[in-house]
Length: 276
Length: 276
Image (cartoon, rainbow over the protein chains, first blue to last red):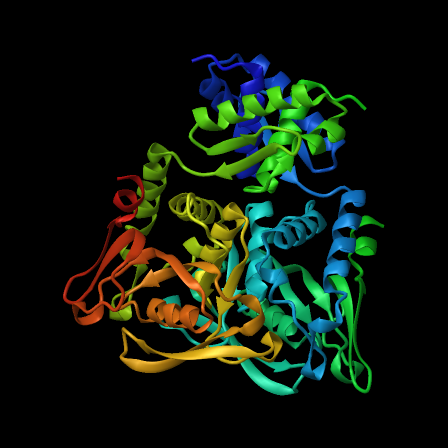
């Protein structure tokens, strides 16, 4: 079956988007479409040019017999700024204020459109670094980790707060929860993380940074390597004390739960960290 | 700026895939590409034909001034069978056996390729039904729910096992955990689910069905409506007693933890439920 260029372009775009950051060989497309490799190469230049023009990703073409193409979804600076502004607007809503200065984010963390933006932003941050795995802690960090994983085409692992029979053997660490100054325990299935792995840590919300600190200890316990930490939202640390100082945040939220009750969201340090 | 057809097809495919099951107007594409609506209509026929040919989705075009196109990602029967066979092969591995007849699935639940297949399969099952929200219970059901939500473009909600300050007011139910015959409690943030909502329930693993039963009670408590329940894997109920009888499973797993220790995975009732 010989497939026309217009149909090839549609199917090729679909296939590359469902296999991001994966080398797809010219041979694969050539056999799939019954077309010469030279035609496939021309198709790929069109795909590359289009993603570049709209600031939606980078297509690298590897020449030669074992060559092919790798699609890396990412945001241009302009598109990233739009996504951050959109997140700020969504969170800037006084009805999100919860007692104790916490912020209600559960609805956003369950919305596909928001998760695509968050995942793509964080994937853009680490686009030129070696990353083997995304780590988060249950529960609300999971959707963030999964979105990043989908765009980076890397697995994600979930640190648990207590033992579960379905995890098999685990490694655990104790950590100080920053917001309540209590010693807690977190653990990770031994099978999920290899020694030497390069790990990106993500979470939904950071106050004191104790949980992120705990994940860093766990990474050391596995002899793995921390590449970076990024959270969706950064709040005010209780007593202004923060246990982590190199964390990137997409947005910052000031939650006033005193006499006046208000939420003020603004961009975090993402744009300066990633694009400056 | 006037954009050529070949570039339009690539960007249009990308845009529709990132906005699945969303009506995108002819006007939007026409302005984006500086092209006549008649040209955009022709582009959309090419996209439609391509997705149909490869069994990867359905593009519906709505004619008229307020018309546009909706891309529904789904699997043809043939592609669904391949995805199920792939899941069976991944799970069919004696080293997944855990004490007590449990099955280690955490690695699969963190793999983007597996999650795409699982999400797309379950989205295919409910493609012609009204669904407002996907529900799951923490922790390992979350990646399944998120994948389904991404393909269906609907939000997902996470039922929690205990109260969390960041959820705001909640509604809770007690339920009998089938595997251990213990009364447990689950709860859901009041803000996340509306009365009358049509809910699809998903989870990673079902033994007795107690957790699924609990979610059904919670749905009733919110005056919402259960559309269906689907799990990635169905195990053997302890004592052969099951509390739920209308659940779809992608695969079935027999875990022998007696004198012989083995895992046997085979297809669940998904294919007959969805395609017969």
